[in-house]
Image (cartoon, rainbow, N blue to C red; front, side):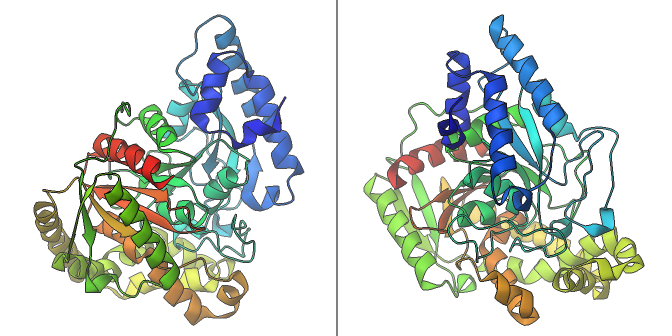
Length: 442
């Protein structure tokens, strides 16, 4: 057994399993021991599933022994955000409102992953009902940020990101409604993929806003993201030969994207310079529909979220962290006609945005315009929590509001990511571009 396995990409672990230099049972035991022995293990995992993990690892090892592996990631251990139903194991979506909720069946993406040979290590902590980009959850646990435990980890897929960043999973599976895969990936120096809405199944996934909810991986490399996407039900992507030379990139230079704080701005500009040096053709332009779309967010996210969870929340409101509860409650005051008009306006803005950006291979923004804020201040200052949360999600929300897919990559500066956005269904194109960009960014 080797602790070095904890820091390998999922793909490299898969190659080790394929070459029989790694045994799936030993690999899973290394991860389970690391989780149990880590001082932040219970702050990252809401619960582990050792019996299931060992059974799945044993089956993977037996398949490898007889030459019947189901794919490169067969036998690789991953974590699951605690909103994916897991048969016989509590799925509580980070909320005391759902305490002891035990589903009978797996979420469809979890079942699909298991059939493909992934080993499910356990369920990771998250923001309550997935409704915050900061990753703060005093009602259950707030995972530590890999760069500073006093800073927010990003959310809502906080534990999914930190399980990978701290070497407690080869990859994490999370969800993204307004940035919940990309923000924690960026703040913990990982790769994160927000998929096109509807591409991957939401069956058995605890909902927040079903019109925006998506499933996506948080991992160490673009190759891992591509492999996991295919395994979860998306397209297969061949990354061989991917290059930046001639790629057309649009940097959004728009008043709606201000302020951006100095550190993320500097990291982003340096990343753009490196992409250009590698042969990408970079254009800068404003896109007026960005600001219009962002202005619609209050009419769309909170009303749908409160429509789903309002009765549950109001039955026991004391069980929620106040800033998150009040964010839900903001949806109660939006009239239904405004919600409908908001969606009609957003559909028109999506069409104009995709027409305006059709000439480009990807649109670039800083993943988050701020660095992770201090946890203690977020806990003690509700106004600070609200303003930082809105700023944190501003850029990632563009991808959700205007549709399409988005990939965040580390820039090399701690907790600073660069996001590449592409049209709906363009995941393969985006991943090839991301693989080339990953090489340029180091």
